[in-house]
Image (cartoon, rainbow over all chains, first blue to last red):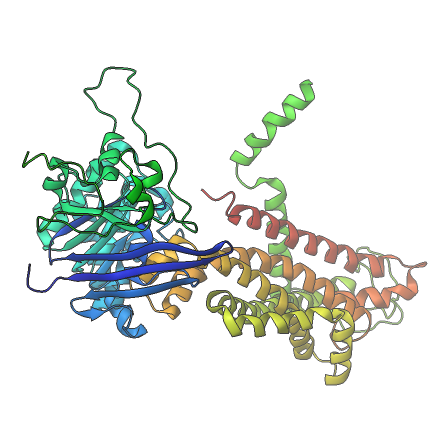
Length: 328
Length: 285
């Protein structure tokens, strides 16, 4: 194992108080991320991946109860005093949100919004901050950065706005960037550009990154490791290459099968995962995926499997994992 | 059918041309009233307080453009000097109310909790009083002076502004860009000043103009009842009150200030309404 992980999430659970009873959005998640490595978190809507990232940032709604720990360079984020947390956010721990239409302030110029973070955390003067903001805009690939810096979010396209949001996140050279579905709200043609930009900046800055997405195709080849989430739990975690070579949990396999294949004959029925994710306030007793799993047996419905794995890096939570093809 | 079609196509076309003739006419009227009120001392006007008992209730004409009132005072001069009182109070009271109300409303909407309960409780109590009766009581108690009238009208307006600011803040604090600012380590003060205030300003600015119209009317009601601007200084409300006795013989004494007040209030409402429509988030680009 690497010396000290940058981020270590230990037995993290998030419970939301709802009218229908407690909703366990994240349950017993363990994850660790080494400096300058990248991790993809993949899961359907409602699998708890966003709640997990919000918990790390301590941006959960007031009705959320968090247990467990999230250590950033050894400091427990949940025990950090408010002021220290505020200095950490944006400075060392930055985030890019899903929808750049709403994550930028509509009445401030984009240059001003980038400069904001620089002035707050690096103590730059207004002029120096603005000059740095223009440089950042150029760096994230926005043409005519001086002119764009004076414009307002509604004058920019969706892709450009997400570039601005990335520039804001990168402005203070964070050590960890959390990108929460950074391309979901964008045109398909722009998605690859934004993902490549994130990958390039990560490499250049030696920054760690958590990329949250519902699309396995997005993490393929872009992150070092992948964690697949289902109903608030991690069901499989492995280095990206290993995961794509052989999926051990039926859920990851089903997710993979749900990606349309280019080589498939026209009019082939798209594979979907039957059923719907379980009601998070009424989780089944056993494995949460068992009602939809085509391999489910008696034990799956009775007991929930823990995340484990015989070969070091590759871990999965399944009683009857798919056969290991590499050894067969 | 043809007429319907014409109407349907005309509306968007007019919108494309900008804010419309009505809006600009209203702006022009306000500019004129403001200019006259500001420049009153430089204009060749009669002394608004000078009485000429030989020229009482003169109808509008060459000697007195808008005629004279029951004491022979020049109505044009009184209307223009009255505009000072009406506009001064009409702008200052909402301004003070907006400053206080916006601060309270934003704090209540952003921090919620005890601050919100106290603020909303206090505004509810204030709103429960019949406003005019309260204004009359306070002015009668504190004494009749322009600062007192401004203070009373401002206090009575604070609850409405507070509610508008709080409602806007409640929506804004849940928006992603506020979360994003928090995620980037912005302090509450910074979030309030840089993220929320610029967005709250738009609805408050439009609301301010509507308040000006309301306050001008409120001031004139106070003056009409004799508890507004102390005589002999003219105000539109007191001029209407003084003209009441001569309504049958010289209706212009009451109707000229009433008409000018009507136009001014209407103009403020039109401008405020148009700005509110522009800044309405549902129509925002």
